[in-house]
Image 1 (tube, rainbow, N blue to C red):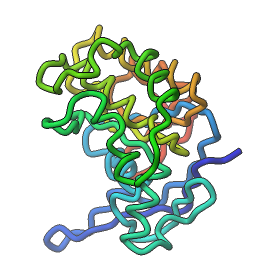
Image 2 (cartoon, helix red, strand yellow):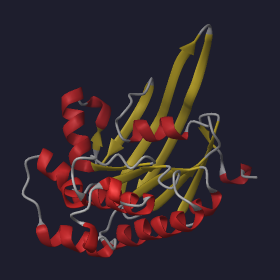
Image 3 (tube, one colour):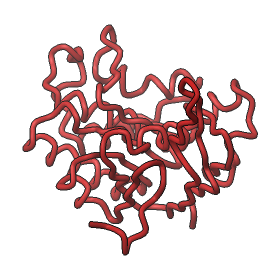
Length: 226
C-alpha cells in the first residue's frame, strides 16, 4: 500500500536573472513499512525535496499525497495540523526543546494536539531506544547520539503515517551514526513505520531497504548510477 506518492514535483525560483530548478519533475512512491534513503551530493535538491514531502515548503508544480491526502490542497493551518498528526520529523540538529526533559520532549507533539498519551506505547518506545534511565534528563545532559534517539522517539510517538529524517547522522561520529540508524531501522520495523531519510553518506544509505539517487533536482535512473 502506498503511503507517499509524488507526481511531477517541481520547485523553481529566480536567482538574479536565472531560474534555478531545485526540483525538476520528480515522481516517486513509497510503500507502507519501507525504509527509503534519498542520496545526493550537496546542492542536488534532496533537502528541498524532503521539505516538500513534509509540507514544510510548497512546490511550484506537482502533487504530494501522504496517506491518501493531497497535502498542498490544504490551507496553511490545516497543513500544520496534518503534519503534526501524520508526519514525524527527525532533524540533523535534533530540535529538542531545551527546557523540557526527555519524556516531555517525546510526548510534546501528542500534547500539542490535545490527545491523551498512550503510556504503554511511549514506555515501549523509550525502552526500545535505550532511554529508560534518561527520561528525567535535560537535552544538554545528553550526548549527540542520545539526543537523536530522543528525536526518533518523539517522531514515532504520534504513530505517524511516515517519518522524514533530514541528515539524521550529520552531527554524529561514524560509530554513533551506525548505532542511531540501526535503532531507527529496528524501531521502524517494530512499530510498523515508514521512513524516508536523506543523507549524503553512502554507508548509512546502504542500511535502507531502497536507495533513490537525486542529482540536479532529478531522480537518477538506476541504470545511470555510477
